Image (cartoon, rainbow, N blue to C red):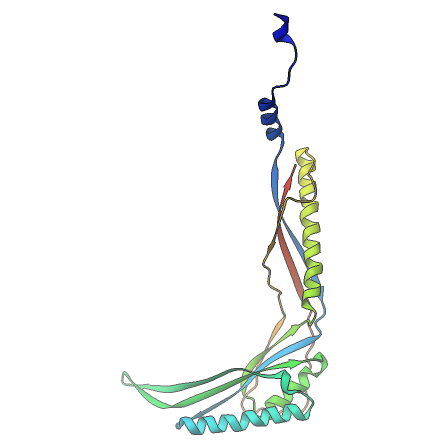
Length: 227
């Protein structure tokens, strides 16, 4: 019968065909910015030892106050001098398999915020000359970190979109925009850190030159596109 030869639309089959030509692709994107730091963080401390714990504490307190006062004299504010850690540790000697208490060690570590990187060398010299005798570190930072991160995030989204479009061209399909899903992937900023060290009772004739290093800020996204 001719009736059964007449073209017709069978929706379930049509829907299955539509699903077959649709697809999804997952693409990761990364954005990076290299920025010049505008401040530095110095970690430096005072260590004292004594057979008597109270004497060790008193000596440490005295030297720590000397460091703080010296830093204030060159313009470092109270807000930029913070205690990072304060520890009291017993010291033991091991003799013939036995541990004998020899005394106590006190460590007071400070975190110094340097608002002008050009002052980093002078601040470090001042702290060591005033009594700081623990090796520390210096790292560079940017104060408007979030602003740069947002720019890096935009670059990451652009990178993911460009990759999706290129993949679509290779597959012979048209990638739809915007993506149906975007997930921000946690990404840590990579501060540049330098090691600082000084022998006990060090004395500087001049402040050590400290050159700033660029910081790389990275953002990453995971996206899902339809085609």
